[in-house]
Amino acid sequence: MSEPALPPYRRSEVRAETEAALAARRELGPEYDEHIAAGLAERVEQLAAYRSVELQHSSARERAELELAQTTQRQGFVLGIISLGVGIPITAISANLAEPHLLGIAVSWAGIVGVNVAHRLGTRRGRLAGGSDPRR
Image 1 (cartoon, helix red, strand yellow):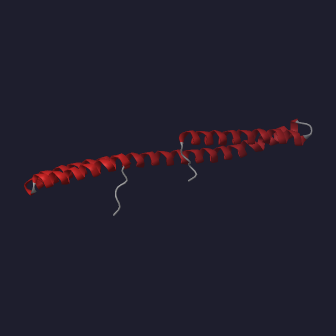
Image 2 (cartoon, rainbow, N blue to C red):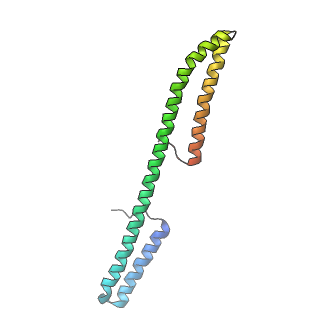
Image 3 (tube, helix red, strand yellow):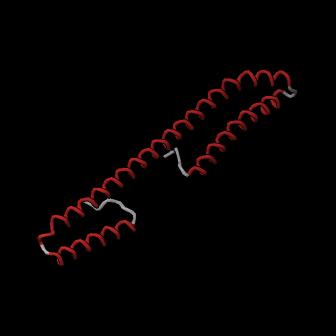
């Protein structure tokens, strides 16, 4: 089994503490083995508790990032549906009011596309500032 992922400074501390305990055992003799083992066991329990909390925080952060990604995708989907629903009557109205008709249609759809692009760029900018990528 591989060594748990501890920060480098933690690994050196653990190694130093273990070596100090072994040196103490050599100096004090076998009659102090129980005390030395108890001290090492306490340190191992502390490291296990530290790692457990670290994993819980990591898991909570990943869940929050996933939830944010799902919300962003849902918002984009809803905006697309609303854009299509609103785009049809706006197209009809702008085609009837503008001369030439194609100009009214182009302007109305350019506005709809502009809103969707602005939304997409805003969510991308928010993702980059937050450091997460919901597309993964």
